[in-house]
Length: 124
Image (tube, rainbow, N blue to C red; front, side, top):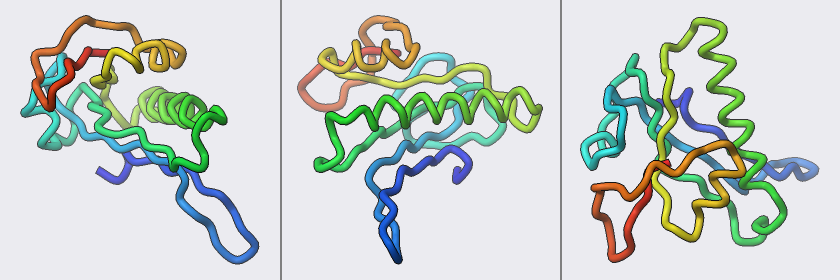
């Protein structure tokens, strides 16, 4: 799903270095389930964000939030232009990151049924 990937690059004189990215897939599900995080169903109504990563040297500078807001704007533009039919953006977050995602406009939907690791996940 290349159209659901977005990278942030640090430009140098002759090259660029990837310093952050977001990747996702589409799903017909309206809540995140284990299955919706493992398959891509093109043309589906939900975008399921899998990863938002920022290089350690670029953290705490606002890049993650800026990248996420740009990603959401990109999704909204594609939908407004009629090239995509998604209407929902979903992600899972650990409790300590809920406020970060709320700053980008996500709402806490409560504890998720997804189990992956020891800590609980929350639907955003």
